[in-house]
Image (tube, rainbow, N blue to C red):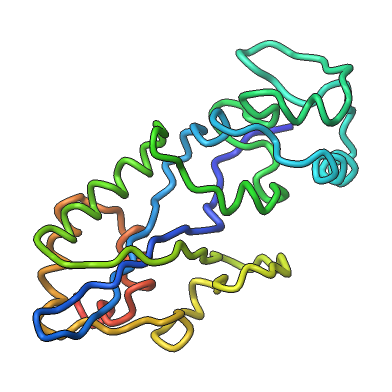
Length: 212
């Protein structure tokens, strides 16, 4: 199976409610920018034997040969349950997921833990600390956004397609005051985001689309 660079199809972001000096609040959504390093696949094993069985059938795979690790072919004669417990995940190859478009929901919505070495998580924390510096805030929920034309029929309540997002589709989104927008955006730019990352940040913070 040929390994290719993935077009990231989901975005996880954290919702922060910023408290103003006047007793109001506004929302700042800070995304987790995946670096495609495979760290998450090293920290968790495949989540579910049933979903593994579905993947094997969908790809018409030989259960005895499920992946490559460390450049060597590894053959598995264990049960699906045992295979699911292997770390790193058996579908990790060259730091990329071999079944990215078919990966289970748990993989899609996985969020790094406190001791995670995930570079996206570490960057998320740095961005959050910078943008929230000297502000009073409440940490809200983590939300997930889809990119592209996937139709996963997810029950996850906050899932929206990226191109469909606006202030009305985001849950409990409060637009920041006009004088708050540009300073937040300029601080975000100090992290040298790519054009795609800028688009994502503006999309999940719709009022910032007004900025250049």
